[in-house]
Length: 369
Ligand code: MRU
Image (cartoon, rainbow, N blue to C red; front, top):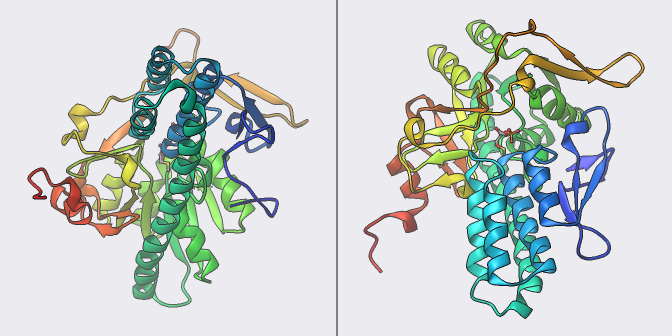
């Protein structure tokens, strides 16, 4: 996508051919700064402290983390230690494990001397594949938007609610949930996006709003609790969100608050779609509520809020009374029954085991041949 009209990805290899550069998403929307990662520890810190975030981008950063580790020490012991350290950075998004396992499958069988070049090549492929997957999700999602918008009436504004940031900043490029929205906007549909602010880290207010602004997509930021109200008043035609891990039977784990939006959508007959790249499917588990580890982050993210003061200076203020404890659950699980459909790179399917297996038949346990 573009920043001030200039094409930009979220992660790339620096001009020197080895360091890795990322956008510091903790500074956005007030500043657009890039950071140079020079070691596996830098990559791990970037994920843990959320300089990069979003399931696909976490995976891509971990892949480059292995590249940086191997530059220092291409031994199998060092590779395994780097794998473990990167895997421990964030627990919920399955793309992290997917990318690390994919890299290990390529790198482990190789001789030490071959590993660095192979690692950079595979990490670059993972990034390019992510872009292609998201582009395909965008095209399939565009058809969903077109058909719902047609039903509403040509020329009417089509209102889409999204939660968190599942735009290009959460991926290598395009985004998942926002890709269909960008394509609908480019196709001339009158889309308007309700952007949930997404407390406590405000990925909606800070990142999604910034992205949509950059691309001229009409949008309005709302507090997280407004979704139910605007759905009751017919102001939402469709919800579309991303996911950090979707189980083999279609339970969707995503940013905390997604479940409440799905409940409100269900109660009000609003279609609720999830944009789902295949590396985000965890084929090893079925029950999302019981089996997905939910990240719990620093309570300070709840008790404090950061913004810019009138002079543009960053300022963090405390919003809770001294001594009040806080809990910070970062994700929740929306059961498959509340999901209208999954939009994958292979097309649209029901949020169910059968629906997913129809699109991904190679995953059928008793597949012949
Ligand atoms: O904590 P974050 O910002 O990494 O959470 C991100 C989300 O929940 C996104 O919706 C999800 O990763 C899908 S991104 C394409």
